[in-house]
Structures are given as C-alpha cells and as structure tokens.
Image 1 (cartoon, rainbow, N blue to C red):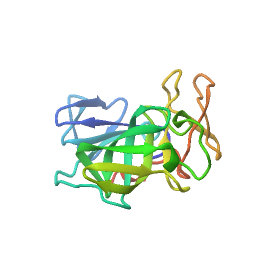
Image 2: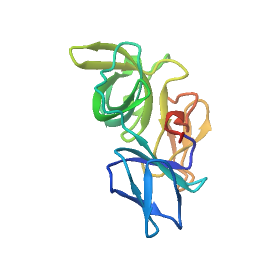
Image 3: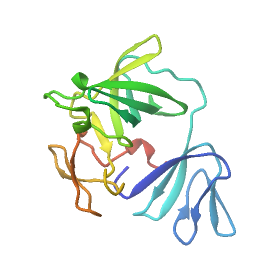
Length: 195
C-alpha cells in the first residue's frame, strides 16, 4: 500500500463512497451511485487511482506462532511497552484481532529512550512474533524489514511522509516533524493491494 490510501474495517452494506469519487472494485457493489461493501473485510480507498475495494477477512481460526510476521495497529503506548491490535497474521486478515506486546528492548538494534520514539497510538506496525506462549504474544521490530509502516501526525492526524530513512517523518499538512522506528518499506502495505 502506498501513500494516498486509507483503510477501514467494514461489514456488508457499509457505505464506502460514491461513484463521483471512486470506481468500485472487488468486494463492493454500487446502487444509485453509492458504493457499498459486499463482504466483511478491510476497505481500501485508493485516492491516487480513485478506486475503492474490500479485501475479505479469512474466517478460519488462526493463532500466531513464533516467527510469524504480523501487522497491527498500536492501541496503547507506555514508557517501555506498546500494545498492538494484530489484524493480519500469515497474510490473512483476522475477524477477531489478537493483542500483542512490544517491549522497548525488542524494538530496535539501537537504544531507544522511550517507546514514544518507537511508535505512537494509531501507527500501523509490521512486527514478528518472537514468543507466543499461553495466549501472550511478544513481538519484535528489530530488523530493517520491521517497524512502523504507516504513521499519523500527533498534531493534526494526517498521514506522515518519510523525510529520512533514519525514522524522521514529516506532516505535509501542518509541518510537524516526528520520529519513529520505521520499516524499510514505510508507506507501503503490499498485502492490501487489490487482486
């Protein structure tokens, strides 16, 4: 997924947009110029190509195991730990997300002073499960392929653009500069591309 796309969880019948703004893609239908979700899944609004589609949830139960790559949304950040709602495991979008824990010591090769320098609430993170035991998922973002892949401005809420590969992000809307532990493919969510 490149910059210029937004996504949200939807169920059948949810209003997604109008044909004046988007062309309907897979997993959608159109009635009287209004585009609706046909399935339960993740609606992707592609503002660059003016297209909207829904990627279907996998309904079979999946439990993350050690070494699985996962995607999650940061739901809470404390000084030394972040909580993530994991919505994608083994390339399958989950109907019922799992909760994962990212400790600051497992976030980066370098020393991080505070978890707020690694990630913030609403960031989308690509992580790896390094320990899945008794229903507790411990995550890591150590490695260049892991880290924040989409971040939002703490001031205005707009998507942050990559300014430097060192994790410096800039908001084009308000000019705010922020730091994150980013993945090398920051700004992309390839799994969410329409097939």
